[in-house]
Length: 72
Image (cartoon, rainbow, N blue to C red; front, side, top):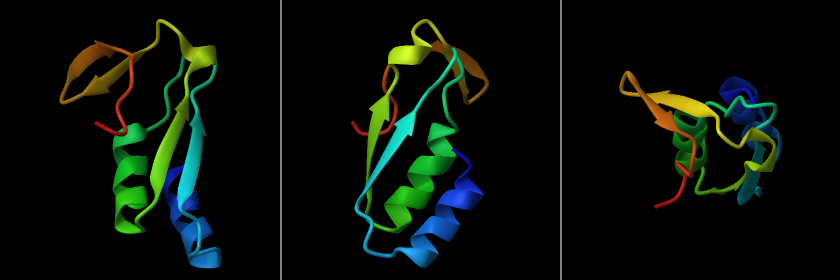
């Protein structure tokens, strides 16, 4: 999911309160950027990582095993 496209979705549908992000084929979404957009609009993130087991995600220049990043 593209953070710029998500911002446009919120412009068209400001009533959206939940965003489902599917991490596919070992490639996690840009969760840090998507979370900023969702936070700005008061929306929660639901992550579907079943197709991305074992993936890594770079946060602050560290490779991390993918777990769950959006909500504490």
